[in-house]
Length: 474
Image (tube, rainbow, N blue to C red; front, side, top):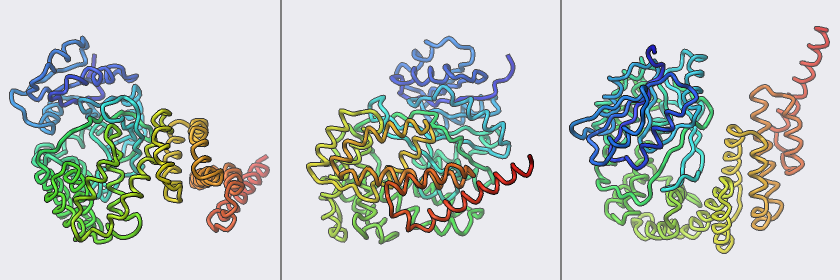
């Protein structure tokens, strides 16, 4: 057998419980020309026993004598690899069976792309059910990496020439945020990134984790951001995002601190975030409250209402004016969890959360419609129109009960009009009039929208021009 085309590298430490499933997800790939390198970072559990269960010549097992951290383990695997492409996989994540095939084919068709990544399915904490789907931008920029790193290690496949340029060992100095250094550095060096467009891995989450060194973790991520922002190659427009980037991370660490009851640390982080970005407490709901809400519903094994009440009671005095938004946040949390569960086929959870949302009179408003529209568009990209229709049917009785048939029509019209714009941008002009008319039938206000009228008329003109061109050729 010749050299493998792809090297899959798994850093392993104390993860034997899930490692077997992770390994099997690689060995079960439809693309078979790969090697799988597992680097045991001095695990105290039975990792070695799990690995030995698999009798496959493509599997290599390397053991560190001392624990050195995941980035050093990845570096060890990279040095031992020989594939043209490098795919990292966390020890508890899973690859879709077509993960490697799709990435290799995309790379072959796009030789100028150095790093490919994909959307992923996020699993519910301590469960194998899907919580939601994360779809990063089709083209990730350096700004995206600095403001809020958009993908996880298991999402990415790299060409070898770029993988060996990753600053894995230096990045390990930042035990949180190392990916910003690794991939931000590649971006600064001219590497191009692109999404393959399909959700091709599953990220597993574990409930009840406590972060022991909150201050150290926050400093580590800020260090990682500054490593890129103060690099002389960093464009001025990205450097100018310094305050926003730091504020984002301070808010994130503040949530973790307050949720764990570490009040003084959390308040300190919030003060830093507010000084960098005072607008986080402006509006209803304000950015900070919305951020705390989304964090609180991340783990459905925990009660977001209890978490939010704990967080709000610890807010610093200068933020006391936003405490009145807690009821909105709690109600919205139940509604979001309900809709999310219904979309991802967890009807019992959906009904249970819905009853609480209805009791608290959570509104179906324009921001919620926009959020759901994006969710449905992402689902269409992965599974097609029929799947979206099924999801809308699942949502229908709850929308009608909660906001009346008008709210359902608003959702349908929002989805259709966004589909019309997508079709127009893709040059699929014959789809645009049909989609726009259906959207208008559900929401006549679109008749007053200049953008809608513009793509409607332009598409008709394009269709006529194409028809004339065909007749002329005949």
